[in-house]
Length: 170
Image 1 (cartoon, rainbow, N blue to C red):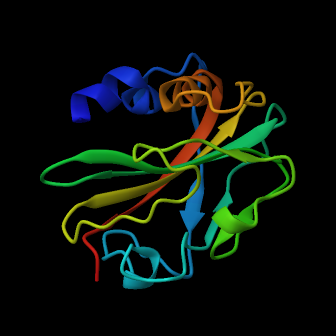
Image 2 (image 1 turned 135 degrees about the horizontal axis):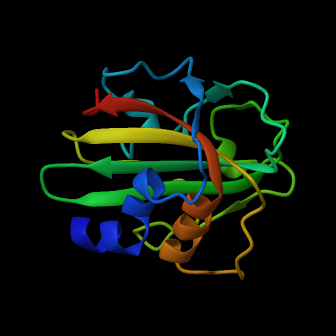
């Protein structure tokens, strides 16, 4: 599975952007702490869905949209749990459960499990990454496009990125 994700786009997000310079994004959350466990309420054992996220970076005049990718690497598998894209560039935060109430004009991709939206992590042990990307354009894909296609479009247009990583589940 890890090899499939790397070859179909997940790996592309982190190293193959055609952007000449990648700026940094600061990510924070009232629910998540870097290097600490994912709160149970944001896992499959809870009921709150996607956690609240906030982000900031230097003003980027080329920013046309924002994307969020949540992926995991556990001892047994790797997976993408959420891809939210075409978030307006003026949006700098999402409340808890945002997968159920999307920012206007944004879309969600079908994730590794086949579900569209936030698929809460279930494995008690693993690394869970919440990544935010500022893009130079909108992600233009057809309805129901494969995950690999959406991830490639995000990677190709990334001009800034940041990540908040949590480990294991409380």
